[in-house]
Length: 235
Image (tube, rainbow, N blue to C red; front, side, top):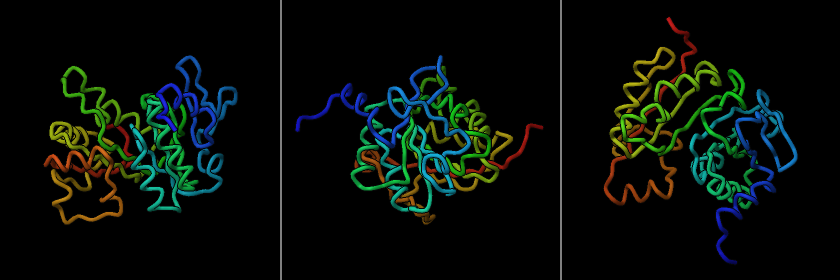
């Protein structure tokens, strides 16, 4: 079979039962296909997954390699990968279906609109894996660990929810440490400038994306930050 084009993948997402799409800011709805609106806000676990398990989001999930890996590690949890790129989501969604992973789904939308589709206190965990570092200072607000995005996460996280960052970019890592430490609603739990040289262990440590493997082969360090939403309010 020939390789599918991006347009073919984007179109086929409409037929995948584990993909939901947001088509534009003029419409707040998610669609299960071209014609069917769904509203799982506040009830993703019950409404889509049919259970009451904990819910983890992977932001800017790309091809969903982390979402897939975590769903295999934790069959008693639910996972949703979020990205704006339809062709990338197609890869993760089709892999999930081939592997029979019913505890993972994908949402195509911009992360800026997260609270449109997830309710207060609905999310138990967030992973941010190798996001765009936006190295130019003028684009700092677009970094997924910027104060602007940390404020957005407050609106969907339950108190005590844990967030994780993995990046190969030392500037983004330093920026993230600074932003988390300065934010009223978060506390740092653990940080390492080279997680694979650290003795700190956790089940997801050795899930490695395609690009992460390339980074490691090139001798890059993988930085890791874990922090917690305290549920606190501004002073």
